[in-house]
Length: 355
Image (cartoon, rainbow, N blue to C red):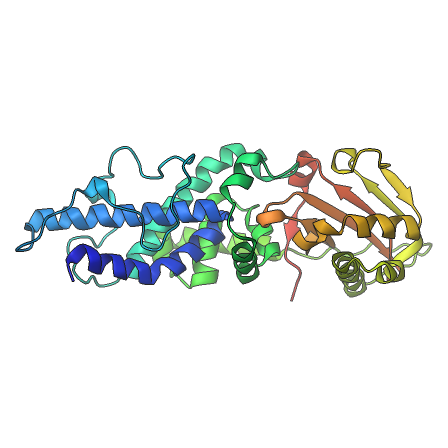
């Protein structure tokens, strides 16, 4: 087997792990595939540069490093998407070490690939930070929906493997925080290697991951005492929210009526409602029937802490679209509000529920 083919096989063995890293960092299957493709291109160029320094093997033809093909097993780029490869190859000396012996066996190719894909993702996250409005609230923009047009089964498997709630919370982290958290907590990458990726000291990289972990886990709010209005304990509040979401997903009218208080009130940002729907409705029967009609949103929903209190987020493809803040008294939902305004969504503090 010639050197390029052997290198492609070694990359293919790592492709699934690299895609998992990139998906957790970026929250987009389309962007994750672009990051993996860019990693393959950098590896191919680096390998070609190493072969050029020591001369071609007898009987072989050294390939043009700018003509590296798609990563093995990667999807073909959509015709309307730009080529993710840069116009000019990145100099070999600017790429992560070790590179000298490529494409021959290296001491730790998986670590090298992890470094490259993480740096690619970090750059993409920093670029995205200037246009975060594309990823929060309103609706899923057309250019994102088209680019993420993978099969529903593929999306479902990825979201299940990562967790919709975690994807939503990860999107609230800063780029370096997200990279440090994903690498350490999901893939057990040591902090000395993370430090090189985020260009910080190992101590600073550890602090980044710790700060991210605190944000992801959050702190449940302590209910304020009000003798005139019986409080539901935090565990009871969570049970009521989970029961509400389960009934909504199943379109189960009876289960909804059981968890809603008789005089429950639903409020919503008008922009998210079907034309002619009132911004506020009252009564368990009316609220339950509307919830059943809108059950399609529930399949994209998850329970999170919203400002410290269990609530519901609707997040197609892991992107926050709506949030439901619920009030629970005596184990039943007495009111809830559907928040869709992007500015209000960004002001929410999101965190995972405690185990």
